Image (cartoon, rainbow, N blue to C red; front, side):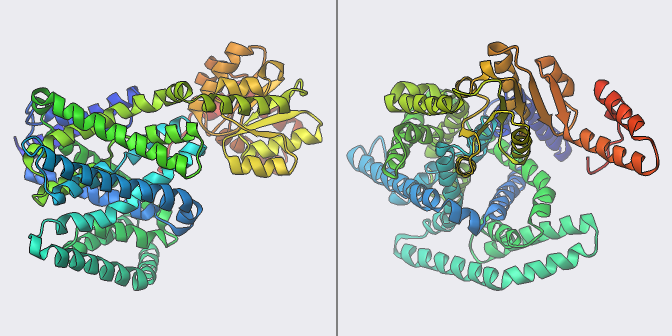
Length: 578
């Protein structure tokens, strides 16, 4: 197969995998893994895991670490330090310690079934300690759980895991040194990493800001993108030259740029490279998986799937409970983080390249990690149902929360329910106060709810896309529901619940543009307010009045456009910014 044919095959497989996952509302990473298994040498054998493709996939890991470094910032860490350096640190360290000790114990008790050195055990423990940031964050974002109590803990642990990869990238290659040279090798690797990172971070930040500013002044888009690629790959090469990993240099490059004002521009420029190359990495991981191993050694693979997943669930739930979380929050945190993660593949591959993980272990562990990640969406989707069954206190706490919401809305009638208390929701509430129209708002940010309540606003903590919350704020007695946040999936859910349980209550929806306008109307929305088009109407109104068009004619024209559902303004020429 020629290079062009191989490239076309990879691209076709990637497209089909991502489309399939999008249709099933699953993260694209699962699609990359599955198509990698299908086209790989152990299934349809359409492609071999060639050296060139593996090198290309390595760049995916480089850009993954670059993006992690780009998102790294001290204010974020400080705001979540209790979850990051408390729960996250305990989870990674204890997982690695327990798995290493358990592996060595099994090796001593049953050497014929389980033979493993402590270096191999530690490398595997590091890989299995990771959870999937890409899958979990995507699922939690879709279900609006990022700002919940368990969501904050999950994000904190994932953030620490991302940071923990950096020392593990230094540790794993050093573990391959001969026994008598192991301690000096570890100390030398740590010293190299410390010196290099210190040099780059002390003088590097000012140099990076000066250089990016110099390039940005040329006002050439391709020059700026080429410069970012050069910095990322150049620092990756520098760390590899120092005997460390490519990924460590990319992480440092991301950290340096994150401290400049060009951070957000770089994020947008680098995203296509990051996503495509990372997709290639996951395809190559899928190609490494031999399904026959699962078939022939199914009991062993099943053991490697269930034991780490159950162990991580129990450990994380127990740690969350010990650090002050309620029973229900602890169980949800454990369920969301029990699976393997994408960095686990990175560390597993690194361990294989350094001859730490034997071939007869690599495939079963890889298979177990892939299977645990495939199960994650189903675990997360059923987590609430399971927790309600397992924890009586969680059911009581949810009931208590709904009761407290209901108490606030019990004396209110003919009120407006505001879904989301951001800037738009707050402005609406102020106007309703002036008109003395009762309202009650639902918001998922506990800090914002607490501040609003201290100011005397009628705001409660709750998810507007859940029936219990809508019933608690008295949807059957309300005069209208207004969705003020820009989340179409959640807005459709609010419309569906309102139409089913209070069909007489109109729903008004705020959207970014008019793309889903007809869908919202078909779903039952009484009014849809597209921000972009309403903004253009306001601009037109002021412009026409300024040039002398009578105000009555302008108002009639604007009203006609609204009545015609913005028919005149729907078709427009898309530019690069759109």
